[in-house]
Length: 312
Image (cartoon, rainbow, N blue to C red; front, side):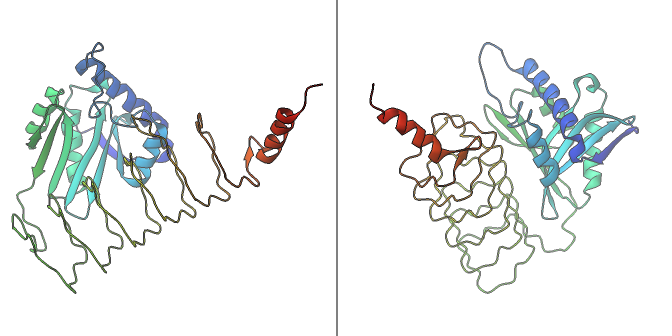
């Protein structure tokens, strides 16, 4: 399969890649999910897999590669590289009509060659996609977790870290670090439960595939940060400055719990191409607010004139 190659995807590829991903994952759903059970499996049909906007986000923020076969686009692979030594295969897809030709194996080989410094690769797949389990094991991956819904895999290179400073399989519980220089430190599969960070610089830090449940962030400078592909259901934001913040391609999750804004200054806010059914605005300053170009103040004035008009 020497005529297979990887090319960095661009925003011009977004629609075609989305179409191809949707076609591939929908075909997988037909193969592994019963139409009578109404099962949702996000490893088979990942969140946003049919969204062009999600594809654009991944092209801009992750390492997204086109899979080319004889100059034809036949698939894609998306990876997250954390630090220098750790990589995660987020998604890989080959068009159904090209599967079974060894392309997936070649793509895995090419992506590992693209990032030779990565010593550890991991990925997840559905427990239902048993052919994937055999495929990843053939590619040198080992199973680290098996649940009813998901299988997790990892592949480690045998070579040690090039800088000779790797600390592996050590119990450092209850340690304290004060006034230390730990720039460019990398952590993978590290248990930091209950840890605390105070008066420390975390500039340009990267967090991916981490569990931050029940964490608290107070008095934090998060300017110019990126928040994308997050599940913030039932979270609370209090005393937060949101100047210049953009919320795009956001929904209320499966439960559909509504967002609540109270005692907030939202001057100049714009809401476009959004669903605002059953939204309620009470006891708020609506000066200058417009809906479809019509001043809300005029709409309310007209409404109350009609409501208060005495019958002839």
